[in-house]
Image 1 (cartoon, rainbow, N blue to C red):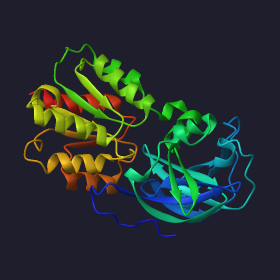
Image 2: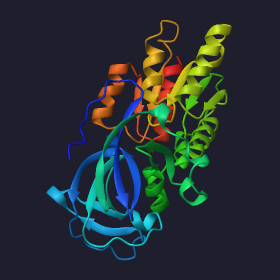
Image 3: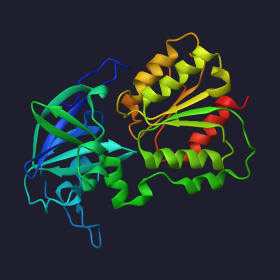
Image 4: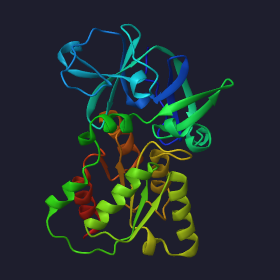
Length: 298
């Protein structure tokens, strides 16, 4: 299946691949997908996490295979089905699924926050819900799934200690991150690094509302001198937020840092075209601080 459907930069749209597990529909952002292949036999890894089926090497690249059905407590997958091979946080991982249904183009505004729709059990590993043709498609939080299996793949806040003693900075920074956990970790890390003047929001729409309010009140420089944004967010994604900032003469000089698990070569090209000043993968929290330093401490 061709997963390389082109989207115009900054339109606030995404492509969602619908797939099934145990008769239920789930979704993944196409931007995370490298390819989809038929199931291949894997080599089990001793003492591995129960959700890890094993490893295999298509085209001489070692890939870890995760039993997504096991992750969702829907049983254990048997031989057959498909592998969705993904790349995010600089990791190549295959997720074992039953079948692929198709690709849907949707707006981030059409994605429902999961808390009001799904159970507490699935709420923790869902980033949103799409209602399509009368059914609900649960978009899974693949980063959280992988981090739950191996915490070392997540944000390593201890990296801040490697930066040594830091001076306190009053530079105001605006953060857009929909994951409550990552939002808190980023805020805590920046405060530890000396940046205490922070406004944190849950998505691009909230962040842009802060910017427009400050513009109207004439307080933009007092409250927003740097923006850190995720890419995948409900209501408004990070690319749309970047585009709106960089197309406005009043805000175009504000540095925008894209901090996302989706930062790969293709996404970097999109970010550059939109005017992003820097783009980093989410595990690189110490590098994020260094980039902020280079952009605001002049």
